[in-house]
Length: 437
Image 1 (tube, helix red, strand yellow):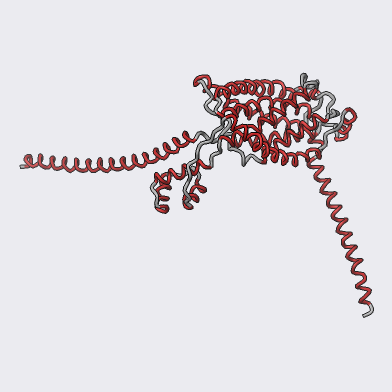
Image 2 (cartoon, rainbow, N blue to C red; image 1 turned 45 degrees about the vertical axis):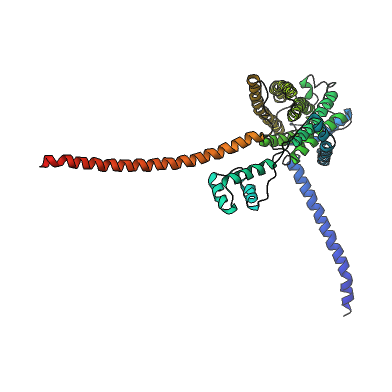
């Protein structure tokens, strides 16, 4: 019994030693995981050319205000959320009153009477349904196919984005792209690599990064993160998948080029992209406002700048510099192929969008106006969609009717053939009787 207090007194010490051992094991495990992640994610053999280490990039601070560190990119996430919040305020405080002053009007939506069965059918099928499904739905709702069709059309029109919403989105992107282009032009016009792209690689990797170039990089990265985070709430575009690929490729390019200190060529790439994007967004704004002549003029300017920068300057100057001129300063390494592969993805998207723009130019030349943005809105005009909706259902109805009439014609034709055979046989029998006699 006397040993019980001694044993109880040892329990706190044992717990303390146990906790201390767990903490040491946790610290050792954390160090091992950090070493493993550094080896996998920040391997010098992948990110940097041969015989170049991270210490070589750190030495670049001697000639400038900072040197690139991967942890610098973490600030892009809170800034992206800040962009989303600022966009929310911008669209309601500035863009919405501007849309009213420019005369943006929305189509009056017809009220849809509540119908739980049709609502469930619409949420399940959207616009992909057949006439036979409408006939089956008629039995459960007690409505005629025409009434069901009108209800579904009105319900679908309610999900369409209004011109005001599309105008506000375009005005937000226009404001950022214009600001980014002017700021990028201001910080790059005095640099040597803006005029001679070989200077993008001279002295690599010991290249200092100025504060203006750093914030230009971080703000562009934050903006594209905000676009990627809000892409599902924005107006759905015809090139929705291509837009997601573009955002992911752009974010990867900005992040990789910053970590590898390819910032000089990265700033040139960003400036080239911003030079035409604000013209496209301004053309959209005036298109939604009904200013057709202004929209046509801006679209022609956008097409000229886009085709010139994305199909001439970008492949002939930038891609040539990253593929060929860079090899005069370092040997190829895995990051070199990764970086150029992402640039080729962007170039493929440029060719795709150029095809859509050339289609619009064809319409502009031969029809005299730009009817709609082939690159932009996935939702066409309501009148056009109603015509397509009605024509699709009418074609299916006509096909069902034509199948029924075709079957009836076949049956009548078969009956006629049977009757003709019977009459023909009777005639043969009657004609053969006198000969037998």
